[in-house]
Length: 93
Image 1 (cartoon, rainbow, N blue to C red):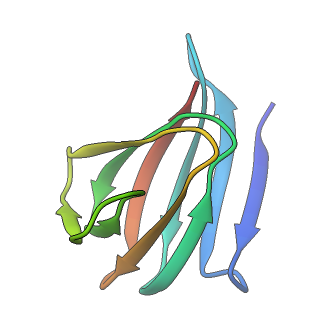
Image 2 (image 1 turned 90 degrees about the horizontal axis):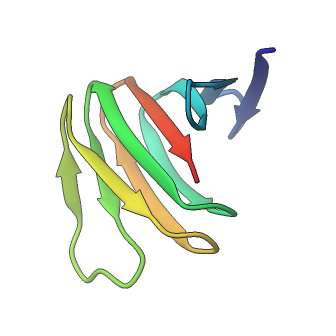
Image 3 (image 1 turned 120 degrees about the horizontal axis):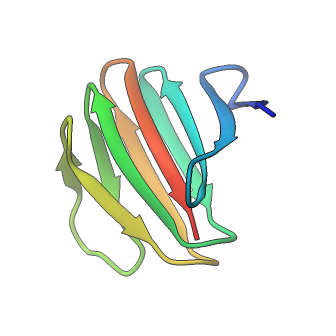
């Protein structure tokens, strides 16, 4: 069953589903700045566009491009800067 989610006044939209092994979401973020908090460990992979990320406990922003992934542990907060509409896949453990 698919579950849709919308955040930040519709600027971030995702569809939740179950992969063969893990729950996941696939979505798109419009240009903007966002802050997310995790409940579970998340692995986010950029599908198209790019994400500039301030990971928890990091001191510098990192940019991730198509095919790149990053991990955010459970119960953490991270920030994103999005310059162009960007698609992503996120799995949850």
